[in-house]
Image 1 (tube, rainbow, N blue to C red):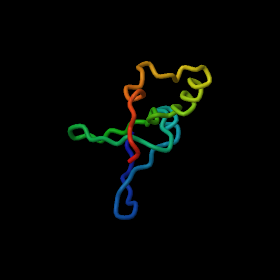
Image 2 (image 1 turned 180 degrees about the horizontal axis):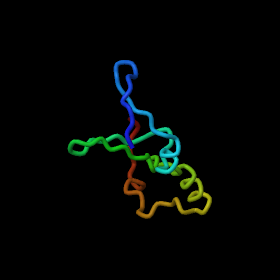
Image 3 (image 1 turned 45 degrees about the horizontal axis):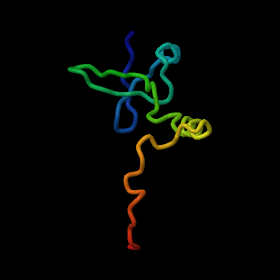
Image 4 (image 1 turned 30 degrees about the vertical axis):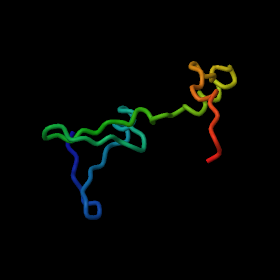
Length: 81
C-alpha cells in the first residue's frame, strides 16, 4: 500500500487508514523505532506498572503484604535526630 507524505507544520506525516490501525491493535500511541533504513511503528501493548495499585490492595486484603524477612533495625534504639 502506498501512502502520501504530507506536511504537518514543520514536520511531515502520513495518514494510516482506520481499518489498518484497528487490525494492528493501534490506539492513541505508537512505539516509533528506526531499524537499519526502515521506520517501524508498533502498538503500545502495555502500560508499565498498570494494575499495580489494585494488585497491592488485593494483597493487603488477603494479608499477603507481610514482611518475609524480619526488620533488621527493629531492635535498635536510634536517638532523636
